[in-house]
Length: 338
Image (spheres, one colour):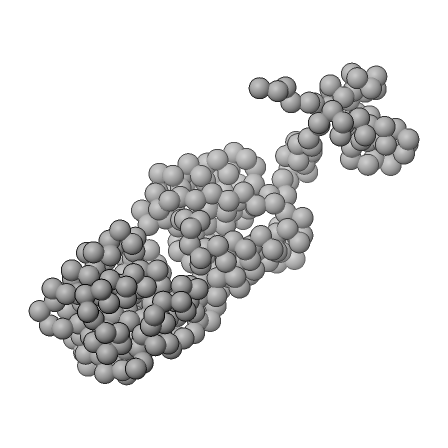
């Protein structure tokens, strides 16, 4: 391994004090321009890299924000991260992004790593498996700003950003009912997570409003991994009472449902109507195109970034915000309308 060049190495080579090197690299007014130019040029040729964490130690600030997400291979999460990064980079902050892979154990490890790295704030969307918030207590105790988005915990002084998932679930289900669906299956993610539990509640509310019964067999709780698509198709095909509508809490899973059902000879929307969730780009390229709920991921990321940086800069107190609700929208396409 090549030895890392330090300020002390530069000082020894240049025959000056480490303090002179440090001040030159930080453009300190007490150092002459000639000395600054000499130090900067030599440091560049020697391959010296500034340690931003060390240079900010005196300020107790790293200009770095930690982000923990369930998975990076999600279009929705990518758009959220894009929004956060846009705001952070424009104001001179860096992001350290980690993924829990839906594991509580990995989420805890990520939280510890980011805490030990000295991040100024933490943004989190929870893993499927996460059952408590113990691993975030160190951030709360040290008053390091903590904000949850999409999949959230309701913790004191920790704001959340999300949509009204219950209202969105209601709207998606009511649309299917208005298309004459009588036996609607809801395919949900883990009901331990707020987003899926609330969408499920909205689904049940719509059934109740329109006088349709809910039966346990009308709920299929999976982790929305496409490896489980066969389980979903068997459930649909094996239903004693014909399923004529499906509300899926995820566009990718809904798209794979369409593909597999078409292979079995189902006509969509004639035989079965399907609504997804997120307005993923794949919803527009599948045939038939997928009716879905638009979840404004980029806007959520922008708002999360602005909120946390505003708090860090002292222009906003996010702890008083509690909960921020973004608007969703039902987008009607071919999978529910002939």
